[in-house]
Image (cartoon, rainbow, N blue to C red):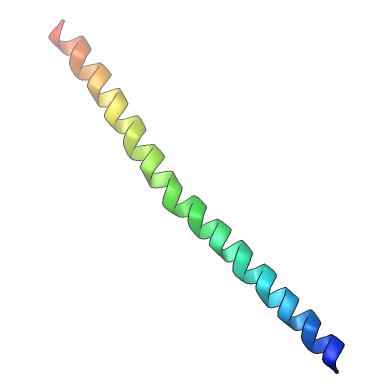
Length: 50
């Protein structure tokens, strides 16, 4: 019984860690997207002023 409980606890910990990892990726992506859009906009604006 105790070994079954330990197994369930370890699975729960793994699930929480993987969920945090996914959340981190979802949080990190929009920042990269915003930076790329800002960079592209700056380059296009610079080229239009030439």
